Amino acid sequence: MKSDGSVSVCAAKGSLKIKSDGIVTGDFVNVENGVITGVLPRKNRLKRPNVANIDLVAVVVGRPPEPDYYLIDKIIGACTINSIDVAVVVNKLDLENAKKIESNYSSAVSEIFRVSAKTGEGIDELFTSLKGKLVVFTGQSAVGKTSILNKIFGENRQVGELSKKTERGKQTTTVSEIIEKNGVEIADTPGFSSIDLALSEDELPHSYPEFLPYLGKCRFSDCRHVGEPDCAVKNAVAENKINKDRYSRYVEIYKEIKNGKKR
Image (cartoon, rainbow, N blue to C red; front, side, top):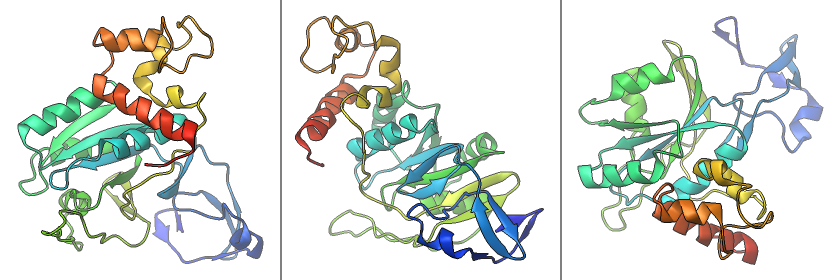
């Protein structure tokens, strides 16, 4: 626990330990005589990674491994529903793939940063944007999250090596902790390759920020924006106001939810 700039180890009251939502990284708590007695109301929370009171989720993408666009879409969706800002941090991508990321997400996230954890390019701009915020860095394993943190904080944490055989990352971050330096707080969380998007058919369109201006303008009030005629979202896609690839993946995710399947 941190209080007035100092860090101390506290025990949790027994009733807090057995609660399913318990105490998570980022919580503000009440403490009496070294014992955490209660958790203050949260403004938001993600369960994977298990962090609360988040100001920004920074989704790091790189290549290799190949960007998992479905994963990025689901992270953005979960954050949007929980009123959490999202930024995409493009690391070690060639120009063509960087432009593809920007085409997909320029209307879906608050900012897109191009950085190089190897050369330090763009790190200062990223650091400046993160000041005063609690930030979760997330994304696929081996895209450079730990390397970027090392550049930001001038540290030398362990960096995993990419498996040459599978081109899939080996997860190296094993615990959630908040790292703070010069006004930036970063929740360094375990990497993951999937996220549960526990949304209903009605909620899913609201998890796409670029859909929001068109919701309620379709012919049918219960439009799912998939096969219905006179759909304002589909019209916006046809007019290149919504990225076609993003929309195509929306349709696939909608089918997942409708059929009770997970990608």
